[in-house]
Length: 413
Image (cartoon, rainbow, N blue to C red):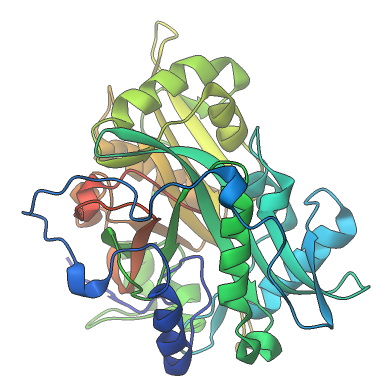
């Protein structure tokens, strides 16, 4: 089989890429936080009694007032359903969020995607934290949390999923990122939450797991034209199109879009499957309804229904395009990302192949997946190429032994 050399867009994660000086400053900040220190990293073989790193406080002991900001700035709780504010969030992220090392691509989270990701049942508006120019609806910093029950080595823990940390480029010298982290932590604490889960492309103190992105070309010619990939040895335009060709329709009988009537059975299938892993979210039925209801250009979810009308398998992928920054021909990279996949009556390989077919039919250019859960089983057979960066998983204020990617059952968008 001919192979393709893959040059990905960084680590496809949820943090801006800092400079080396910002990394140093960041480490100094994290040294003050209840996270495992690099010097005390627990090996996979060591036995450790997992639990909080800092003693759990009472809500009354938590700082009751927001952290100080420069006089020109103020804290805001961003209403995701207010069109003016969500447009501010969109513009901040679109212009200042994750870029690859060569500044060729930048994530382009859509407004429907942001509303989907940030408003599950029970979300807390105060956890959508913004820093704005005083007296104006102008965001210069943003960070979010949503509530989740995260199971770590069999222990269910109430946590915040922290995401979308972004600071306007001109304000990064002001050290706003640590203040945003401290403020969202304070807001989680005053609701009685003391732990969090988050991801980053850089190594901070201290990952519980390190995953890698793999990429499967769906439109190999476009990917080469925009600099996302390049043709490997003996591969040209015609050969690449032949190599990555897919059938037009799903191959598994009974594949159909997820519907509201599937919530209960999919919830059961999902939780039965995720319990095999050492780190996963304990979804409620309301979470299944919210996160898997199909939305065009946001989330694509499917079930497999057998001849008896019984739902046996489930799979999903989400849409996260990137702006193409330096290309005269193409302005957008359409990328699909594997979300939650539950093989049962059918093999993971067959399900992933149908995901590729469906993503291609939706005009995606590339399909991305992490090497978590059982995903590594399918990458070689389905012509995925390895990416060039890692995605680190972190727990805040929780001590636990580290994991290999196959133990991880969480996908953070």
